[in-house]
Image (cartoon, rainbow, N blue to C red; front, top):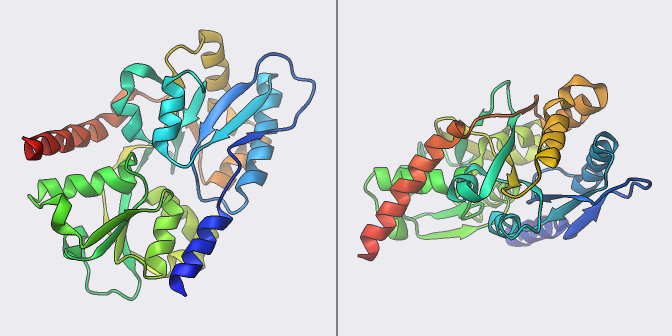
Length: 291
């Protein structure tokens, strides 16, 4: 029954691959913005409203392109099949030379967030990730910092063997689904975006109440909006300006409130140095084990 509930939830979250905002009378080619699954209950409804907002400011059509993983979105960017995308800091640092940092969301006034390690609320014994040896663990995406990289970096730092530490590890391909998997007992623990968990606590308290946070990571650069390297300066500047000025008008603030964000800032690539360090450590550990 618990597995059925989880699969039903995953099916309900399925979204069309592309979503045109439906505005008419706009000139110029469409701005193609890539997205991966997020936690909003009415994802499509929100994107339609946000798309109209972006179109009205850019005076151009906007096309949202949705895929189920960060890898798919990153590949589309690198092939110039997208102009911009909201991705994770992990693929940004992995492909830093092929991408340009456009904007970073502000959460609680800062361009930062954390990874959370969660367990079922009924589990009162587990106190950290390292207490989950031999258990079933849920990751969000292999290219997610908070949903994969941080947890594996912790194991390497603790000199644990990542391949054998957990009885089983699996990917849910969305942070909300990590929470759902832990909440219904499909996993004994999971790695999740702390911002997503906190926002779900605001909007879906009955879900997060069935989980408990046992560990929080240091702060890292918030998942950024990036541009493909070849995007024109005009397009880059216009989209960046629309995002960083969203908090300046009532409609923009309303959209940000639904996302539980304070705004966007141009940000700095140095925000992601901590993620790059963890990536380097894991790459070295992988190469050493393969030697």
